[in-house]
Image (cartoon, rainbow, N blue to C red; front, top):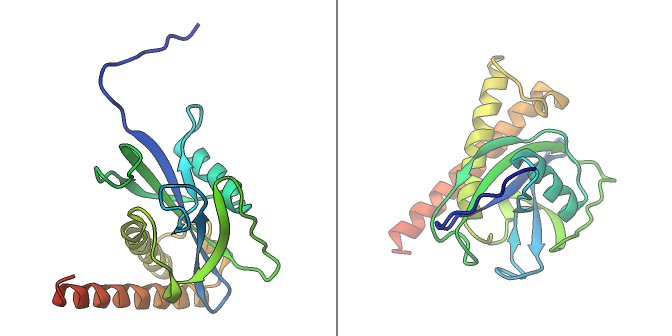
Length: 196
């Protein structure tokens, strides 16, 4: 018989977020869901949600991705835990974020489910405003993705999902990621200059 422990101290909730990049040989896209519930109903976010008590973070992110988009992937890479105190207006929430890369096929159909109204692939250059702190998480994911691509190009290491692409694709992906990150840095500098 297992014992249940209770404590007088409040505990944070834990969520998982899935950053899924899709590549069709030319363009790099990001999978987003339109939230169907508050907070941020009608806003775009990464697929994700609260971990269940009997699953690991890795199991939770794969489950949430499948429930909210219909997409099933095998591997995701953990990029970090995001714990800003007020990142979620519902309660104290720490999110563990993961990323992966998939090959986009013409016949790959997304099916929004659970608390997602829509699921859609967005070009990186055409991303809508993101809910929660997902813009910050995206930048960390792209830095990790960029590092993984560099290691693969230097022949030091290759993640499982990169192995489905040719070396020429890796170079193009690295260019796309670097270009987007430069644009974001430029936009942030402009906003600082404007006092925003």
